[in-house]
Length: 262
Image (cartoon, rainbow, N blue to C red; front, side, top):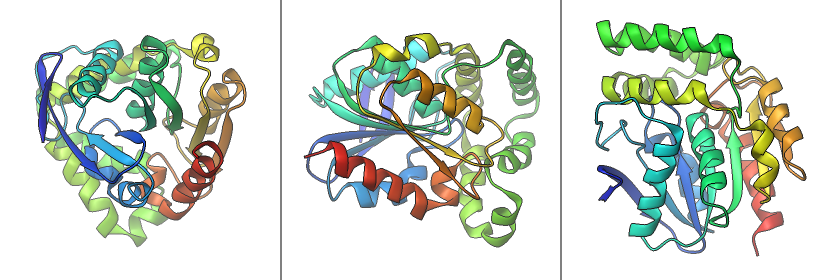
């Protein structure tokens, strides 16, 4: 299904019945990274997955994008589907969009799961993102595939489960350059830590113990800034903790929703 919102067509999928739950993926992925979780969650929720602007089967207009723009895309999607309230699960960029949305549209989100993400990047992160932008603009996505997989998965997992790494590699390659570049302008500008206390909804913070990109210290910063939040550190997982350790990730979600959802 495609829905026009905020000047772009977003590809989305809906499954299950119950309260709405939206799932937002990482940079250079698409809604399929949530296949495992969506199957489980659709037994309890009406699950909305969508390809973020510039990714998957959604439109990829020239950037730069901003996190506010990506949050507005979600609001337009919610409005088109008459979603007045929803739970949110976001990983990496998806977690950043969730934080931004919760602050920009207070009262819409009923809970947040913020996985392998950050509320703030140090200033010295900017040049790293600019280097990636220049590389992609000159050579396309292929040079990013191998180093990205090395950051996103531990070496033992990459060696033991090539069949689970391969779809992520395919998603990275297939990401439109305009979408990657647009979102890469948005991501390093996040600076929400001091505002997180305004959100005021149940929040679960999840992080892979071996995540080098948004490490445990960043997750703890979010947890410390959100009164009443929970923090779960998943052993033997890097950045895509849900793919590397799906059982532990799913168990953390189950415990969280068993507590907060009637």
